[in-house]
Amino acid sequence: MSARLLAWEQAQADELLADVFGYHAVQLGWLELQALRNNRMPHRWQARAEFEWQDDPGQGGKSPLVACAESAPDVWLDSRAWPWQADSLDLVVLPHTLERSADPHACLREVERVLIPEGQVLITGLNPLSWWGLQQARAQDAPGQGQTLIAYRRLRDWLRLLGFEVQVSRFGGWTPAWRQERWMQRMDWMETAGARWWSIFGGVYLLMATKRVPGGRLLEARQWRTVRSPTAATAPVARSDSSTGRRAVAKDIFDAR
Image 1 (cartoon, rainbow, N blue to C red):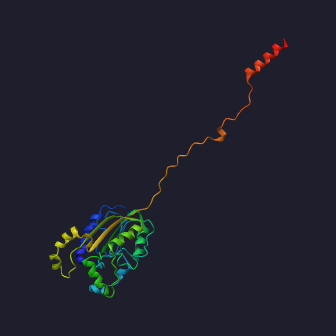
Image 2 (cartoon, rainbow, N blue to C red):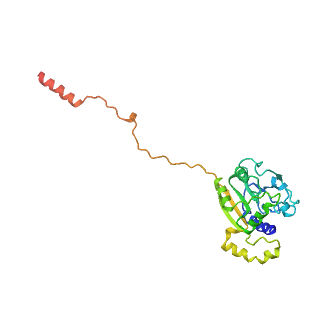
Image 3 (cartoon, rainbow, N blue to C red):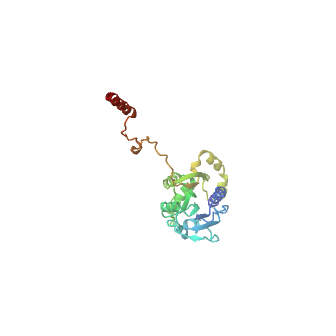
């Protein structure tokens, strides 16, 4: 299952992240997935989280989501407290990181904090409503398992509350998670049928979202009624009528004669 999971997610990351531009990108977790290999940003870091220190006895040693020793990380960090300052990263990739973090809410809040406005995040996770999710749920009883699957719709709600807008959502992996590869190959017809008829029941989902920040907008002023200023009003001025005065003078002269 891990080989099919890796192949599907690698193909999706190569397609979606090739044309994402910026300066700084970070992938946290599962370094076997080279999500940033086709991206052209000048500064790209691969980081491991605190949960990758632990072995997974249920998988016969290391968990299939833990990178091999040859993939040396650039930095180790706590998924709940990132070392980058606010508004400093252009792209963040979380391959099965939230479902393994001790506090996925805090991890998402940190992603929202460090991303610049219009920055993007790519998240992958196992779908609990699938054959792969059922197998993972049965493995929860094994000691050392700290993985909690997050439903697709719940994750979309979390992103919406943090101000993200989901741009891409995809599913993959409808074949039951058999232990032997030859049995999975016999069920390959389920991939085509699942993509067409029951896409939301794929074994793994992918979400790509953009951080939206509300901007200011200049509002037009209200059109008020024009009122004349009192200082501009014409003041009455006392004046004498010159014609009336001349008639009065002429009358006095006539009476004197």
